[in-house]
Amino acid sequence: MIDNNPFYESDIFRINEGTNGKVFYQADAKLDLYNTLPICGVPSKWIVHDESEIVEEDYGDFKYQYINGTDDVFLKGLSDSAEFKSSELVLPYDANVIARSAFNKSFVGQNKILNSITSIYMPEESQIERIQIAAFAENTSITSVNLDGNKLVHVGIASFRDCSKLTQITLSNKVKDIGPWCFLNCSNLTQVNLHE
Image (tube, rainbow, N blue to C red; front, side):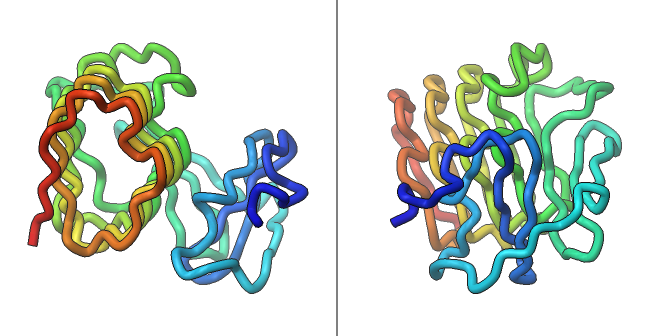
Protein backbone atom coordinates (compact mmCIF):
# COMPACT_ATOMS: atom_id res chain seq x y z
CA MET A 1 0.00 0.00 0.00
CA ILE A 2 1.36 3.41 -0.97
CA ASP A 3 0.58 5.05 2.40
CA ASN A 4 3.00 2.64 4.07
CA ASN A 5 5.90 3.59 1.82
CA PRO A 6 8.85 4.64 4.00
CA PHE A 7 9.37 7.82 1.97
CA TYR A 8 5.77 9.04 2.13
CA GLU A 9 5.57 12.65 3.34
CA SER A 10 9.35 12.83 3.48
CA ASP A 11 10.85 16.31 3.66
CA ILE A 12 14.05 15.01 2.13
CA PHE A 13 13.04 14.23 -1.42
CA ARG A 14 10.20 13.41 -3.75
CA ILE A 15 10.34 10.68 -6.36
CA ASN A 16 9.06 11.44 -9.87
CA GLU A 17 8.77 9.04 -12.76
CA GLY A 18 9.71 10.12 -16.25
CA THR A 19 7.95 8.96 -19.38
CA ASN A 20 10.98 6.85 -20.27
CA GLY A 21 10.66 4.83 -17.04
CA LYS A 22 13.46 6.62 -15.20
CA VAL A 23 12.80 8.01 -11.78
CA PHE A 24 14.49 10.94 -10.16
CA TYR A 25 14.14 13.05 -7.07
CA GLN A 26 13.55 16.67 -6.25
CA ALA A 27 15.19 17.91 -3.07
CA ASP A 28 13.33 19.74 -0.31
CA ALA A 29 9.88 18.64 -1.42
CA LYS A 30 7.31 16.28 0.06
CA LEU A 31 7.09 12.88 -1.50
CA ASP A 32 4.37 12.59 -4.08
CA LEU A 33 3.99 8.89 -4.78
CA TYR A 34 0.33 9.11 -5.70
CA ASN A 35 1.09 11.30 -8.65
CA THR A 36 4.36 9.81 -9.77
CA LEU A 37 3.39 6.19 -10.20
CA PRO A 38 2.49 5.28 -13.74
CA ILE A 39 -1.21 4.90 -14.44
CA CYS A 40 -0.83 1.15 -14.87
CA GLY A 41 0.97 0.39 -11.60
CA VAL A 42 4.20 0.50 -9.64
CA PRO A 43 7.46 1.48 -11.37
CA SER A 44 9.88 -1.38 -11.96
CA LYS A 45 12.97 0.61 -10.99
CA TRP A 46 13.91 3.80 -9.23
CA ILE A 47 16.94 5.76 -10.33
CA VAL A 48 18.14 8.66 -8.23
CA HIS A 49 19.93 11.33 -10.23
CA ASP A 50 22.65 13.54 -8.87
CA GLU A 51 21.26 16.98 -8.03
CA SER A 52 23.68 18.55 -10.53
CA GLU A 53 21.68 16.85 -13.31
CA ILE A 54 18.54 18.81 -12.38
CA VAL A 55 18.24 21.97 -14.44
CA GLU A 56 15.70 24.67 -13.66
CA GLU A 57 15.32 27.76 -15.82
CA ASP A 58 12.94 30.52 -16.81
CA TYR A 59 11.87 30.88 -20.40
CA GLY A 60 9.45 33.66 -21.21
CA ASP A 61 6.59 33.71 -18.71
CA PHE A 62 7.22 30.20 -17.36
CA LYS A 63 9.63 28.20 -15.18
CA TYR A 64 10.80 24.81 -16.42
CA GLN A 65 12.72 21.92 -14.93
CA TYR A 66 14.34 19.00 -16.69
CA ILE A 67 16.78 16.24 -15.83
CA ASN A 68 19.74 15.75 -18.11
CA GLY A 69 19.36 12.43 -19.89
CA THR A 70 15.56 12.14 -19.51
CA ASP A 71 12.70 13.03 -21.82
CA ASP A 72 10.52 14.91 -19.33
CA VAL A 73 10.19 18.68 -19.27
CA PHE A 74 8.30 19.92 -16.20
CA LEU A 75 6.33 23.15 -16.24
CA LYS A 76 7.03 24.49 -12.72
CA GLY A 77 4.86 27.63 -12.79
CA LEU A 78 5.21 31.28 -13.69
CA SER A 79 8.61 32.91 -14.01
CA ASP A 80 9.46 35.80 -11.70
CA SER A 81 9.30 38.16 -14.67
CA ALA A 82 5.95 36.90 -16.01
CA GLU A 83 3.58 39.54 -17.32
CA PHE A 84 0.10 38.68 -18.55
CA LYS A 85 -2.19 41.15 -20.23
CA SER A 86 -5.01 38.61 -20.51
CA SER A 87 -7.20 36.88 -17.95
CA GLU A 88 -6.60 33.56 -19.78
CA LEU A 89 -3.58 31.40 -18.94
CA VAL A 90 -2.59 29.58 -22.15
CA LEU A 91 -0.37 26.65 -21.21
CA PRO A 92 2.84 26.37 -23.27
CA TYR A 93 3.39 23.65 -25.88
CA ASP A 94 6.89 22.58 -24.88
CA ALA A 95 6.45 20.84 -21.50
CA ASN A 96 5.03 17.35 -21.08
CA VAL A 97 4.29 17.47 -17.33
CA ILE A 98 2.71 20.19 -15.21
CA ALA A 99 4.61 19.84 -11.95
CA ARG A 100 3.16 19.32 -8.50
CA SER A 101 1.65 22.57 -7.15
CA ALA A 102 2.97 24.56 -10.15
CA PHE A 103 0.10 27.06 -10.03
CA ASN A 104 -1.18 26.30 -6.52
CA LYS A 105 -1.74 29.53 -4.61
CA SER A 106 -0.64 27.97 -1.31
CA PHE A 107 2.79 27.28 -2.78
CA VAL A 108 3.34 30.28 -5.02
CA GLY A 109 1.76 32.83 -2.70
CA GLN A 110 -0.69 35.54 -3.56
CA ASN A 111 0.77 36.13 -6.99
CA LYS A 112 -1.10 39.06 -8.57
CA ILE A 113 -0.98 37.37 -11.97
CA LEU A 114 -2.69 34.24 -10.64
CA ASN A 115 -5.29 36.45 -8.96
CA SER A 116 -6.20 37.94 -12.35
CA ILE A 117 -6.47 34.65 -14.26
CA THR A 118 -10.06 33.48 -14.73
CA SER A 119 -9.53 30.74 -17.34
CA ILE A 120 -6.94 28.12 -18.25
CA TYR A 121 -6.50 26.84 -21.79
CA MET A 122 -4.46 23.86 -23.03
CA PRO A 123 -4.34 23.84 -26.86
CA GLU A 124 -4.94 20.59 -28.76
CA GLU A 125 -1.31 20.61 -29.95
CA SER A 126 0.03 20.71 -26.39
CA GLN A 127 2.66 18.12 -25.44
CA ILE A 128 1.39 17.92 -21.83
CA GLU A 129 0.68 14.31 -20.85
CA ARG A 130 0.30 14.59 -17.06
CA ILE A 131 -0.87 17.12 -14.54
CA GLN A 132 0.58 16.37 -11.11
CA ILE A 133 -0.98 16.69 -7.68
CA ALA A 134 -2.58 20.03 -6.69
CA ALA A 135 -1.20 21.77 -9.79
CA PHE A 136 -3.93 24.45 -9.87
CA ALA A 137 -5.39 24.08 -6.37
CA GLU A 138 -6.80 27.03 -4.43
CA ASN A 139 -7.08 29.37 -7.40
CA THR A 140 -10.33 31.03 -6.41
CA SER A 141 -10.45 33.34 -9.45
CA ILE A 142 -10.60 30.52 -12.06
CA THR A 143 -14.06 30.06 -13.57
CA SER A 144 -13.35 27.85 -16.61
CA VAL A 145 -10.74 25.30 -17.67
CA ASN A 146 -10.20 23.80 -21.13
CA LEU A 147 -7.76 20.86 -21.08
CA ASP A 148 -8.13 19.90 -24.72
CA GLY A 149 -4.58 18.62 -25.27
CA ASN A 150 -4.38 15.56 -27.51
CA LYS A 151 -1.68 13.96 -25.33
CA LEU A 152 -3.16 14.59 -21.87
CA VAL A 153 -3.94 11.24 -20.18
CA HIS A 154 -3.60 11.94 -16.44
CA VAL A 155 -5.07 14.67 -14.22
CA GLY A 156 -3.61 14.28 -10.75
CA ILE A 157 -5.00 14.20 -7.24
CA ALA A 158 -6.59 17.44 -6.07
CA SER A 159 -5.48 19.25 -9.23
CA PHE A 160 -8.29 21.80 -8.95
CA ARG A 161 -9.12 21.42 -5.26
CA ASP A 162 -10.70 24.52 -3.71
CA CYS A 163 -11.16 26.36 -7.00
CA SER A 164 -14.45 27.60 -5.61
CA LYS A 165 -15.48 29.75 -8.61
CA LEU A 166 -14.82 27.03 -11.20
CA THR A 167 -18.07 26.48 -13.14
CA GLN A 168 -17.02 24.43 -16.17
CA ILE A 169 -14.22 22.21 -17.39
CA THR A 170 -13.55 20.63 -20.78
CA LEU A 171 -11.37 17.52 -21.02
CA SER A 172 -9.96 15.72 -24.02
CA ASN A 173 -11.45 12.27 -24.53
CA LYS A 174 -7.85 10.96 -24.31
CA VAL A 175 -7.86 11.48 -20.51
CA LYS A 176 -7.75 8.03 -18.90
CA ASP A 177 -7.22 8.88 -15.25
CA ILE A 178 -8.58 11.64 -13.00
CA GLY A 179 -7.16 11.55 -9.48
CA PRO A 180 -9.26 11.54 -6.32
CA TRP A 181 -10.33 14.90 -4.91
CA CYS A 182 -9.53 16.52 -8.27
CA PHE A 183 -12.54 18.84 -7.92
CA LEU A 184 -12.94 18.78 -4.13
CA ASN A 185 -14.71 21.93 -2.89
CA CYS A 186 -15.40 23.16 -6.42
CA SER A 187 -18.93 23.93 -5.27
CA ASN A 188 -19.92 25.90 -8.40
CA LEU A 189 -18.77 23.27 -10.91
CA THR A 190 -21.88 22.43 -12.93
CA GLN A 191 -20.52 21.41 -16.32
CA VAL A 192 -17.90 18.83 -17.38
CA ASN A 193 -17.45 18.38 -21.13
CA LEU A 194 -15.53 15.66 -22.97
CA HIS A 195 -14.12 16.95 -26.25
CA GLU A 196 -13.71 14.47 -29.09
